[in-house]
Length: 216
Ligand code: AMP
Image 1 (cartoon, protein in one colour):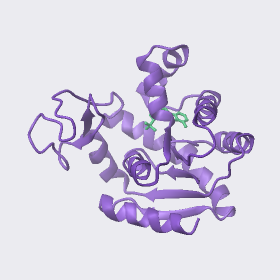
Image 2 (cartoon, rainbow, N blue to C red):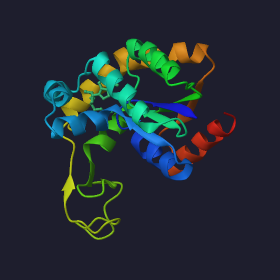
Image 3 (cartoon, rainbow, N blue to C red):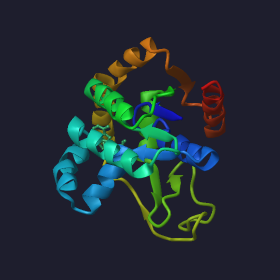
């Protein structure tokens, strides 16, 4: 099964993708994560992408589609893919169709997480994660049980994304509205879209996604 998780930054795509990975053995393909890894490793792609990401703008379609193509190739056939944060433009929609065809895969469902923008800014600006295992936390909604210690691995090192500040978040939202939301009608015309209330508690969002996937 191959699915897309679509929604503005902070809608919970990463959280839900992580659940599908552990529950269904699928693989999360997050172009944001791949780009952050490239920035950290200072590869040519990372060097090119860094300033664009820091401003909250979109990296070129060719770069992100090449990253996805390479990941699918490395994955082999049997594992389902969750596209998280990709595609984000109509060009990427066309590129993904071509990539899937090349890898003998089909797109089974597009899940749109519907959310309220002001609430999203609160969610994003407070989020941080364990620097060791990546477990996600939030200043207001989900502090570690013991302050300063990761619940999952015990590490005391945490990190925040550089683009999780209010100004950049507003730019990322505007990019979503201008370039990503307009790709939905083409997937709707193909009968692929299920809308899920992304403001509901995490468990309820997961249950709604599961219901959407049983019919696939
Ligand atoms: P994300 O982690 O999905 O919020 O992505 C972080 C940043 O990486 C975005 O603000 C963009 O600068 C860049 N990025 C991630 N995915 C894409 C994509 N599919 N197309 C263009 N830029 C992307």
